Figure 1 (cartoon, one colour):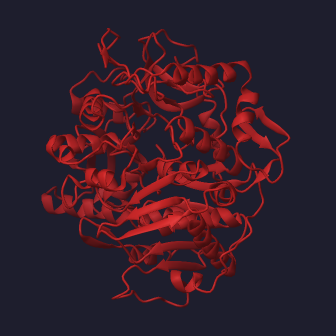
Figure 2: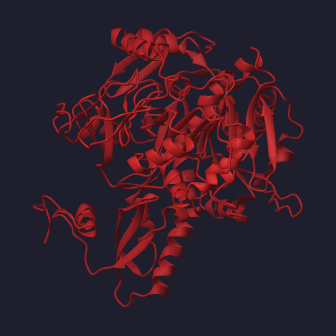
Length: 630
């Protein structure tokens, strides 16, 4: 159902099907908004009260800018709420996790079975000397053991840092060393488009100069030709858990204790380790999964993200398990062996909630309507998007073809740092293609000028969050100054680094980054990290990279490279440089284009002006160039 009216971009407004946009749903949304406005502390107290605490918290929040403490002095363990609570309260035999491999292998875990496997690995980690506060790096493919590893760390109070399995040895080493990881959990290989991609060999290279690592646990998936285990440091996954007890008492964690570190690419310098706490993160993940994604008891829920990213942490693992959902997980890529794979899985497994990325949607658009039309998608009831703004064309296709012009499309904006959804269109609310939506109940967002003043509707400004929220990061690992920058760039607000526009109805449109972060196919890639990988090649003297708009990936990376004297540009050298980036960072961060240049635009203080490179590339006005050196 469509109601047309003009907003600043001339977008259309879609009203959900009447069965979704009922009076009770709209009243519930308004009630949550009103309850939060009236008493934020009581609002979050009610949410947290739906979860189990081994020791009740004394106070909901203390706010001493820029640090907030949530659910003060409360004690819990997130796995007690993800597993034990359901095992003990009627969901013992409910399916928690369904996994499908690229080779059509399937595995199913009930909540009882998942809890048992988590406890076995938790006991195995303890046998290796891992305890509360120790860091464990998880570098794995999308398999059940990846989820089990995260939960096993949380069970014993170890802090996990999950690294995306597409990163190369250099990026992995940096994250291991930065976290001071005591143990690395990996696998022999991952399957991708019918090929076996080795992971263990990447880890072997990454730990050579990682003195904190005492053990590497290896999941051997290829049992016909098992990789060799080097006994001096490596441990076989199955051998480790084989004799372990199926029960493991959950470590009692203070609400403020760290749960995980997730490294996200920085705009300058090294990747920053975002730290999330046990209590606040748990409440935010639970609340948004239940109320934004509308997860119900009988749903089969599929978030297509890799657990190596924050979306996978919150909306593949913790959020849906906290809410007692049935999670579908797959190693398969969207277009292999053909572009119909995902739609066949929706049909086969009866997926009801599909949470995916605009990049995937745009890719499917290229293949036309035939592939999804071959499948019965009638099980779906909620569609959702994450990663970068869902452009209107992609929204229209998703809504029309997959949603049959009936289903809600939940376009979520949030970040690694926020830990949970912040701005979206809730199920039942009118949808505006190109607009993420409004701040959800519990979030105070605004669009402001440099002084922190709200700008009028239709005016671009910086996106900020004015008040703390439970799942906000509790720090940047070993970098207090960097954490404080988030809360001091514009007044006392949290500065998201995104530019936005708000319309007269309060809907937010995210229009791009205000810093040097590049979002490629939903992955946050820092310019500094790519430039460092480029300059590590012996022929490269200096490099700068920008994001260049792409119809499928949202952006591709273009590199501008200055060569050292005596080196001649050419295809062979270009391929060598690209290979260097692949080896350091993995294919996700490889530039799609390299241009050899004689100089780079810089400020008088020597900072590369990437926006000038981008403006020239896109043929637009570069704006103020008063600080340009030459």
